Image: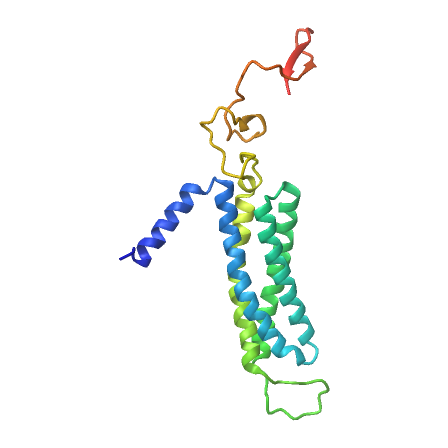
Length: 220
C-alpha cells in the first residue's frame, strides 16, 4: 500500500523546499504547472467554441483561448530549452498581461451567464444562448487565473535560479560540484559554483592598473 495523500503532499512540499535552488527542478515544476493549465485551457477552448456565436463577444473568447494555448506551449518549450535573462523577462511580461486578460474573461462571462434568455425586446445584437457554456468559460478561466498566480510568483521569485548556467554540457544533467572537471565558479557570479580548478594550463589574462602604478595581470 502506497503513502496516503497527506503524506505524499508533505513529501512533495519537503522536496520543493529542498530542491528549490536547482534550476532543472524549478523548470520541471513550472513546466508541470504549464501542462496543468494547458489541460484546463483545452476545456476552456471547447466552451469558447460553443459560445462563439454570441453577438459581440464570441470571437474575443476564442482568440483568448488560442492565446492561452500558445503561451502555455511556448512557456514549456522555453523552460525545457533553458531561459536567459531576456527570454525569461519576456515570459514574465506576457504572463502578467494574460493574467489580467484571463481575470477579465472570467468576470465578463460570469456576469454574461446571468442574462435573460426569455428577453424579447428591441435591442439589436442581443443573444443569450448556451448559458451553461458561458458558465464553463467563466469557471475554467477562473481556474486558469488561479494557477497563473503561483506560476508568476515562481517566475519572478526564482528567476535567478532559472537562468543559472550550471549544467554539465553532456546530457543537460545537473552539475556535480564534487567533480573537479566542472568549475561553474568561472561563469557563475552568484557564488553558487566552486572556484576554478587550477590544472596548470595557461590562462588568458588581461593587464589592469593597480594603485601603485605597476601593471597587474588578472584572469578572465
